[in-house]
Image (tube, rainbow, N blue to C red; front, side):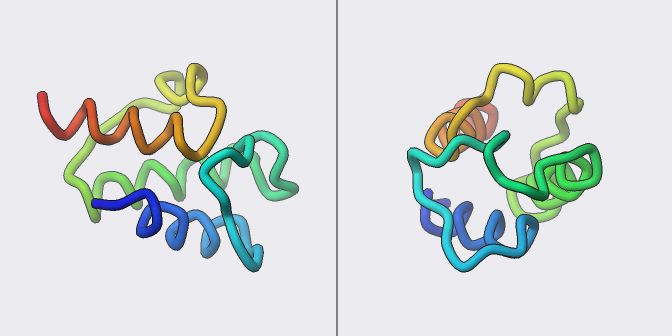
Length: 75
């Protein structure tokens, strides 16, 4: 997985034109409980990662999310 692929998934979730690695997730207008659930579904479907919404509390930027996903994939 690349950060670019993850960004593409976030573009769809947040319904925006682009997502950059240093973008703060909570700054997106559509960051809410529904987008969190969508993100959890994407992580499960594309990366085989099962997480709880509370685990995303520590994730601030898109790059942080990418690092989080990579760490979970290697466990």
